[in-house]
Figure 1 (spheres, rainbow, N blue to C red):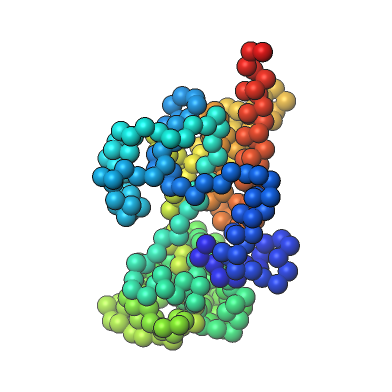
Figure 2: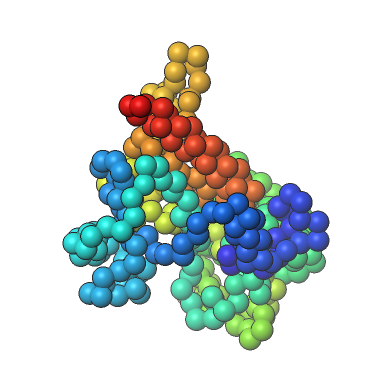
Length: 318
């Protein structure tokens, strides 16, 4: 949604705007008489079937408060939402609410996303050939982004607020061994400068502010899955991602083992800890975060949901 040009999606030969790709997918679905409803799902109840979903918000709940609410605040809002009658019922639900990249919350930041500011180095590195770019972060993602960018750009600078990285030792070593990458420890981006595109960054280094010319700023400070309405409904891991048998985590491995059948297969790998509730995309995937990967997971979840509904249909009397 925040990507300008997408070039790493199969079949897209000349690149396509992120929003246009989304619209094309929507129109493709419309060809098959799919009912599409653009509503806010504000609360769910997966404790029994049919599952209950609430759309919209009661007058007593402000939209901005709902969006910005943390988990604890949302639970209070959910009590008000669920005091109203639910208006959607389902025998199967696919959760694909995605994740959002954590931001620096600086003035001008959102305005320049796609105009020098990016949250995906793998997606956008080629647009910054022979340019000066900065990466904010200190984990493995930041190291991977810096190394990917170093293949195309003229200069990469990592900005990290602490005096050491939390990334794995091997990833740190690769960064330190790369002559194109400079590291600024004990540093923070304090201001983003530019009108139509990113031009400069004000960075505080060891307590002193300096201005640096910049063509690109890549944020690698983490992602937050959009799962607050699903807490206490399906199992979430410690990072807030929905757990399925496909999750690349200890929780996912445990669920996969529980679901193994006599043939050594997992019948419905995209199913969550609640039977009939499935999940796909960046709400599950904490590793790849690519549109094509999320699309593939969505396909799998749809096929699993279809099998599940078929089982329900055949289990009913008559």
